[in-house]
Length: 485
Image 1: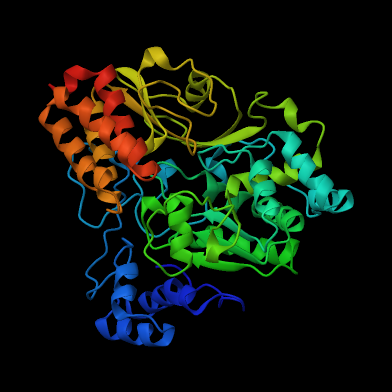
Image 2: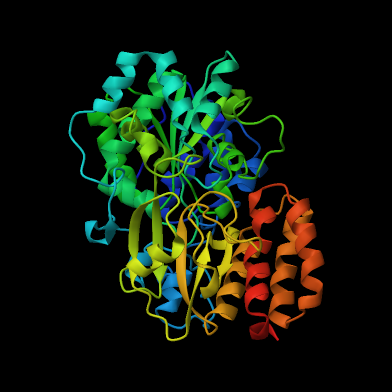
C-alpha cells in the first residue's frame, strides 16, 4: 500500500501506535493474520477484540492472502470514460485521478499539466517563507487577530471560520493538538493532492504559521493511505520550511467517514473510526482529550497567502468568504483537472472553461456523495458555501463532475446512493439501515416512499455522511424524475 511513515515521536500514548503498526504489517506481509492481531494486542496492552474492531473498520486492510488487486478506478468520472452502467468490481474504489480517466494502477504525483488554472494557492512560490516571517514579527496575539479579521473559512467542506476555531481552542487554556486533515477520501476530489504535489512548501508554511499561533503540544498530519507522493512532498517541505517542528504522520486505511473530524481523531487514537457524539466539540475535547484544531490542507495553504498580503486578502472572493477555492473538475469535459477560482464565481463560467463534451444537456454533480445534482437551467449560481440548490447540490470539498443529462443521471445517482450505503460506519441506525434502503427505493422507482425515508436519514443520523446522503437522491429525482420510472 503506502510507504512506511516515520516512527511516532515521543508523547503519543501506546494505543495510538495501532494504525501505524497495521500499515507496517500489511506493507510487509500483504495482509493481517490472527497471529499478528494477537501480537499487536499484547504489545499495545489491548484486548484482541479491540484490535480487530479497529482494523476491520478500514476498507483497505486485508485479512486473507491477497489475490490480484483491483487497480481499475471505480469512481464516477472513470466510469463515465467507459461505461457508467457497468457493475463495480468488488474491492474497487476511486483512485482520485479523475483528471486522467480512466485511471488504473498505483497513485502518482499530481501532474502540473492538470493544473488548469492557478491562483495564489497553486502559483509557484518563493523559497523564503515570508508569510511565516510576517506572523512571527507580529506576534502570536496579533497574528491570531489577522486570521480572525481575514474571514478565512476552512476549506474542508464545512467552511467554519478558521480564526474562531483557533481562538476557541486557545480559550480552553490547556495544551492543544493541531491536526492537518489530508485524508481526502471523497470520490471526484483531488485538489489537496494537487496542493501537496504542486505547492507543498505553501502548505508546510501554513502549518508552521498555525503552529506559531497555537503552540500545540502535538502536531499530526493525517493523510489518505494511498497518497504517498503527496505525503512525501509535504514531509520534505516541512523539513525545509520548519525543521524545528515535530510532526507525526498517520495514514488512513480507507473510508469516507474519515472526512468527519472526530472519526479521524478516533483513528489516530487507535480506535474504531466512527463519529463521536457532540458536545464536546473537538476544540473543547478532541485528540486524547486535548482541545484540538483540525484544518484541511487547503486551509493551511491559505495562511501564507493571507500573511503575504494582509490588506489584499479580502479583495478576492466574497465578503462572507474571501479568497479562492481549488476546484476538482472532471467527467465529460475536455480539460479535467484543478481550477483555482475566486469564491463567488458563477458555476457555469467555471464549467465552460473546462470544455463540456455533452451530447445532451450539461448537468453537474456538485459536492459528490454528500452533495447533489444540478440541471442545465440551474448552473448560474455563484460558487459559495452552503447549498447551491435546496435539493442538495453544494460547494462542499470542491468536487464537480460534469454529466450528460439525462443519459448519465440514473446510473450516477444510483452510484452515489450505493457509495453512501457502503461507506456508512454503522454506528447509528438511520444511516446504517436507511442509506441502503434509499438506494433500493431509487433503483425500484418507488419515488413516493423516498421523501419520508430521506427525512429520517437526514435528521436522525449522527454525522454528515448520513445527514447529507439524501442529497444526490433528492436532487436527481427533482430534476429528472422520468429516468427512475
